[in-house]
Length: 382
Image (cartoon, rainbow, N blue to C red):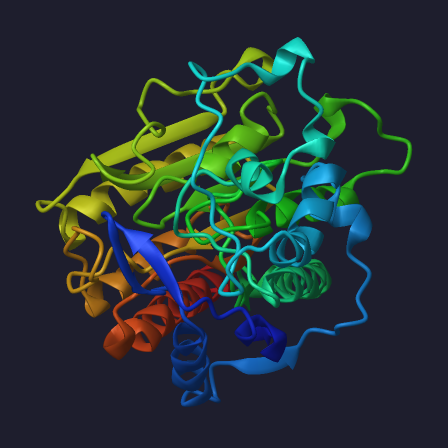
């Protein structure tokens, strides 16, 4: 399996976040990236590394998901913040546009004239997603990693269709599934999996195709502990992208991810939330839900599967409350190999914060996928 990475993903390194009212060291640290890469480097027979090019043009693909004003905000927020007297540690909001506070739709407020502290609350929904001097650079690198992985996937899946499903791992940081079209949060700035889905559609779609019905079908399988509110929001009315999420309730981001959220308008029925209880969800309970998710993805008939790969479902994760084991993650990878049997899958890194076992858990998912995929290919050729 190819592993795509960029050393630029390491430069985003906030000093702190505010968690449950306490200022704590930033959990989504560069060390996470390093231990995952090291663990996969120890298995050279299974993984080959490809460095994403920093010269890769991503503008068109970034803007296929995100509002241009938002992209400009992330790019320039830190400089504007410091110039206005903000803390050099990073941009952190303190006031948010609650629906009961104000309604931007009435046109009375010119957003472009808001002070940096006000824009911070407009474009971010929590206190765990600061923008530092290097945040934009790392977030762009994560998109470059994602697009490079998708390019490899489209090439290899066409060349290896008879050898079982092809998998590629995009080792991204910062993560992305909490980021919406014009909103950051949950350590996320740009939604890497959403950009992947749109890119894969653009590569597979005929240039003459213009309507939604003709878009290639993409399934997004979100196995992070937290609900991917941003990904759901981006595709909520889109029948060409099937979003499936296994996540904890009740937990962050608190206000999204119920089973009743199934899509809107033409997208009705193309969102599947599988909320699972905290403290009592271990390997068996999780795998039962995952098998159901895989079945629904296969019914959908996806041409590609994009996986939001979070291993914060681990039994020792410091901020999460599931009980999955490293052995269980290998089975998770095996189950994912059966999603859209025969199609390509790109894994995009999301959460996971227990540093000691983080690399082993990611490796277990990917190796489980590879083993199951090879087994399916061998059975098919027998």
